[in-house]
Length: 129
Image 1: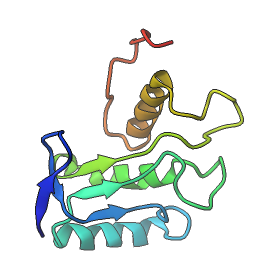
Image 2 (image 1 turned 120 degrees about the vertical axis):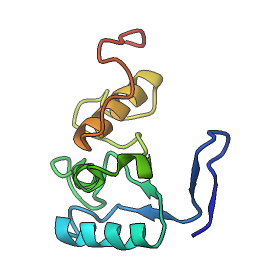
Image 3 (image 1 turned 90 degrees about the horizontal axis):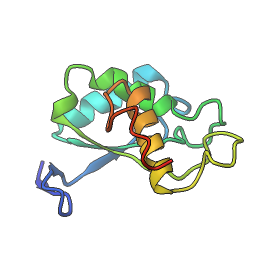
Image 4 (image 1 turned 30 degrees about the vertical axis):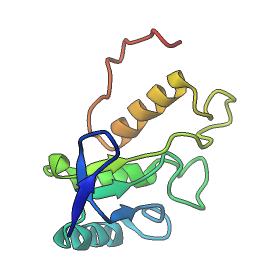
């Protein structure tokens, strides 16, 4: 597998990125894990998710993909780069959508929490409220 720099981040990722939008609805956890295992064996180190995955789900299923990824990444987190998106509607509340700076930080925290991967910033960082 070839690897390349991801923009100006300095991170090196596989040239192929595995999208996970079906994990948790169209693909159950066992199938999702098998797909991830096969991708890892092929050298893929770049995974893509979103706060609103699995695609085609409801507000109740949003985030399920991140939970599956978090379980699978346990013990190998530092071997992969996880990309996410944070724009979709996460609840009926009007502030639970969009891409403001404070919203993006809140969604990043939620993504990492659902995936059990840590925190991107201090929980008490309230400068953007």
